[in-house]
Length: 286
Ligand code: PDD
Image (tube, rainbow, N blue to C red; front, side):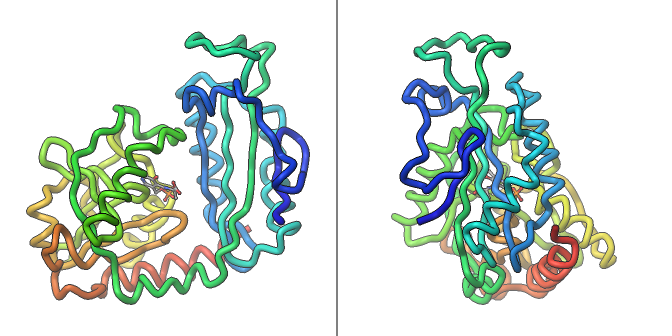
């Protein structure tokens, strides 16, 4: 039984409740963050908190009163649940003023809902999938236009995962106007020669915290980086492909729509970036 956090209280998971009128539940009016934990410490924590603040601001969603206590709340949940390796999930919604209405409730009188829980994932950094690589399919990107805001509107990404599963693959890369946007829950990259190519930031993709760190490490390791959109055909013809996210770190992609990428095995660039990312992140963990 996990200890979870809801609106100021640490409770057993089966005692934590949120109103049926909560706008997170009725309208997907909420934002979230997923921070990984390695060796009991938080990875890229400052980045996740900065993006959370930005997501709230973009949606005119008030910060919960406990916003400044988020570092302590994360640490307390990791401690209380004995998480060595795993994740902390955080969600903030616009709360509820006790009824359903398209109009936002009065921010002065309606406290946002704040929920956090942990997911224990022993051996998170030693995921065997990193040795075999992922198979992805391509699907149309049917999400809304503000993918830079990390909202809990995850129905389409979830459907994308199911489409991938039905096709015998691990994940889906989404395509818009012939160009790859991102994976269902990760940023997408290809490698051509000595150059790492990943979509530029904009409203079309989530500004991955892992992406920012990986691009910084790539530059420090003298690798070439091009931030631009790429086509599916370019990806299939690339030397390597990979994805990044807080939960997967750097994960090689070895097949796209049944076509082997490069040698069809995890490539040296993805493998090296994964090693660097995990090592450097462990060092900087808090
Ligand atoms: N997903 N793009 C999308 C659409 C995502 O959902 C995520 C993260 C990323 C990678 O962002 P970051 O490196 O900050 O984790 C990119 C999280 C892990 C999730 O939904 O579980």
